[in-house]
Length: 203
Image (cartoon, rainbow, N blue to C red; front, side):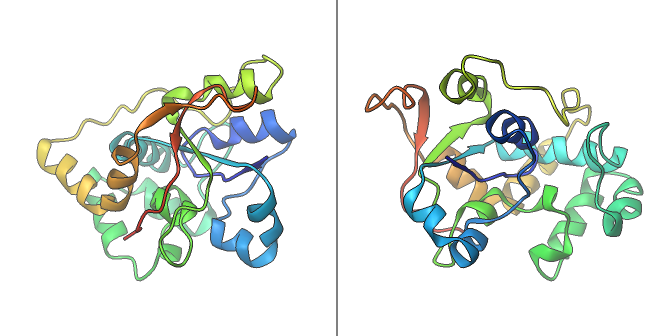
């Protein structure tokens, strides 16, 4: 199983359950370049999350400088702790010259999941609300451990800010709402309700 770790989507907890160690935030383009056989031969899974919820989780995390299990990377630590509002964070993201000019937590989910042609290369997409099912599939029935988690987002947004978040993460909104759910019953490890991956043009 290849787990593609999208930040702020419970990836540290899932990595620990699957591998007993942490998988870094590598995109499918990275795997295609350095280990193409993993994408070609292995089943792959990633967690996707409502873009607004994910952004608010990332924002609270950024303002706090991280969590007990992980910290915001050094180049962004002081910048993010100085954010005074959601709009400051969105200004930072919109003004970045490239995705590499923001921390991993603020990069779009599609940035990790789509290849250079904009096609989603992960075979199975699991909604954030379904991560508990991974324990039954791959963890021998054990619950997914709780790592790098913060309480529910404490920041509230106005309707205007919510629209702005959705505009900034338009490709993630299309991804999250663009797949229909279905039950996979081909094998015992495919019994959860998942999001079926299909070609998708990332913006």
